[in-house]
Amino acid sequence: MRLGKEPLELPLSPLEHTWILDLDGTIVKHNGYKLDGADSFLEGAQEFLASIPEKDMVIILTSRPEEFREQTEAFLQEHGVRYNAILFNIPYGERILINDDKPSGLRMAVAIAKQRDSKLALKAVIDEEAALEAAAAP
Image (cartoon, one colour):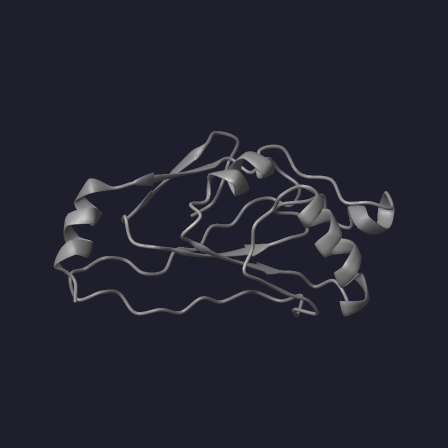
């Protein structure tokens, strides 16, 4: 899927989810911490992050060197961004997610691409049909 200017509705099951989020260019201005001396959220990012259910796991990926960990984590904490893990020094190449679908047919891997530094226009919605499938899954 590719995000555009209009909000994309992402149908999800009522199960707990794992969010794997890139940091620079997705949530905050790409290289803003270098160019501006501080991070700044992209339009819609804070609202999106706040909408992630508390029970879900959030993993943040960044190509930033480890030396920027303290500065980055301070920014996230100052703005109340909840996450379970943050990984630094991630390679610049593609990020590939591979997962198996449930026997019920519930799709277990979703990938969304967005234009760098564009608005984060994504809204997760619980799909009742997926809820029934999830309930039937082992």
